[in-house]
Structures are given as structure tokens and as C-alpha cells.
Image (tube, each protein chain N blue to C red):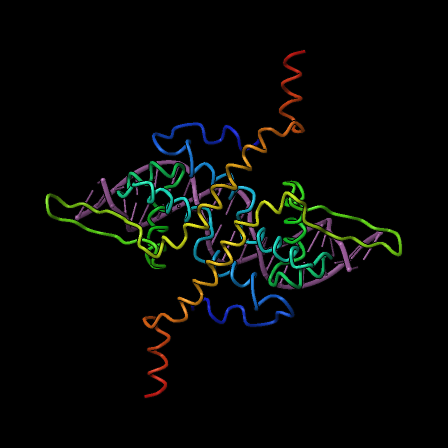
Length: 135
Length: 135
DNA sequence: CAGTATCCACTAGGATACTG
DNA sequence: CAGTATCCTAGTGGATACTG
């Protein structure tokens, strides 16, 4: 079953004709905890399995394996097996994955901005704790 | 616990100083199945609880309730209670949520593009089935 | 209308161990 | 190195019913 006729029923107004359907389609393939992180790791030059696992910290081998397969299925990643000097397996991003650049970039920008904002926010418990330590 | 010192340990190279950390921070607050959809629904003018539930098709009252609370906690949504003509509860996006616009827009654009690509892809089983019907 | 309460099913994903 | 196999738990979130 593909995504196509999934959003065609029961919606009253603004649903199908637009944004909600589009983000639904997007999240369907790049949503979840790891997909974008793996893509970023690949874009930073990590191509071997264990490299990736080290770079995307916290991901288990099982999960990384699954993610790579899904990313391959969806056309973002290509798996290459070289045998020439020795057997080497490398993953690389496809050109199609480049279409995600605006998404990635805006997400990265926003994440940095948000982190900065959180840190400079004076209202959380952190400052209270600090003052308690001072006292 | 806030996001701050979550990404400070065990990473070797490109992790902390950049993109992976940033998307991590971003996904931490806007990741998941519903957050962005609820924000979009709100941006389209749906402000009452049941409106939202109807617009974001598939979401249950319980989940919508939780999502709204989290969005409020993270500063994206404000909950207003009016009592003047009658008791009316409305949700509205904050200005901070506007900072998500680039993310939303790129995601929407990509989703539309991706859907179009999937539909025009000749290689899936769909066309085979169609041909079987023709034969 | 705007939720809350309960119960329950599913599954993403962590831990650990193992293999070619 | 590049995974696979198993097992198992925590959390997401659907269904349904109920409340002020």
C-alpha cells in the first residue's frame, strides 16, 4: 500500500487539499527518531556501518540496520559493496536525498536558534537552583 | 531535565558541534507524529478543541489534549479562556511558533514534491496491476 | 463543547549475544 | 567489520466511556 489514497476519506475542510497531507507524506518517510540523523551523518562523510553507529550516538546496530534499509527503500541511500582491495561496504546518499536539503537546513537552523533561546531563558528552574546554591 | 547537557557525553567527532545536536534539539520538541500537524491545523484557523480534532484526522481526544499541553509548555501555543458571551476555550499560536515557518514550509514543499514523484514513478506494482486489469 | 479516565494493543527500540 | 537474532520493556496512542 502506498501513501496515495490514504488521505482521501472523512475529512471535512482543509485537510486533503494541502499542508496536512503534505507533511503527512513527508513524515511518513523521514519522520521518526533516527532517519534524519542518519542522513546527516551520511552527509558528513560517514559511510561505513560502524562509523555511522558511532556518529549517530545512541543508535543500536539493529535499529541502524533497519533505518538504512528503509532509507534505501525510499531512495535516499545507496548501499555499495566493493570487493577490489578487500570487501568493503559503504553507504552513500543519492541525489534524491539532496532534495531534503531545505528541510534539513531549516531544521538545523531552527534547532540552533531554539537551543540558544532555551539557554538564555531566565525563567526555568535552573536559575532557581543556582540561587539556592549561592545562598 | 532540559535539553542542555543531554548531548555532552561519549561523542567522538562531529556530533556535538553541530548539525546532529541541532536536529536533536529540534526533534525533541517538534518531533513525533502529531506536533507539526496540530500546529498546521492551528495556523489554518482552527482554534477550538473539537475543530482541531476534526481537522487533524485520526487524532484522539486524549492525544490531542496531551499534544496541546506539550505545545503550550514549549511555548508554541497559548490557551485562552473567554467567558464573556459564554465560556469559550480557544487555542492560538504564539509568535514563537512563527519561527517554525521555514521548517513547516520546506517540509510541506518537500512533501508535495515527494508525493508527485511517487505517483509518477512507473516502477511500482501499481502499474503492473493496471496492466493486469487491461489484459 | 472540552476534555479526563481507563484499559489495552502495538511497536519502536534498547540490551545483549552471536555470526560470516 | 557488518550486521542478525532474540528477548523484552517503555511508551505511544487507539477505543471507549464518562464528566462538568
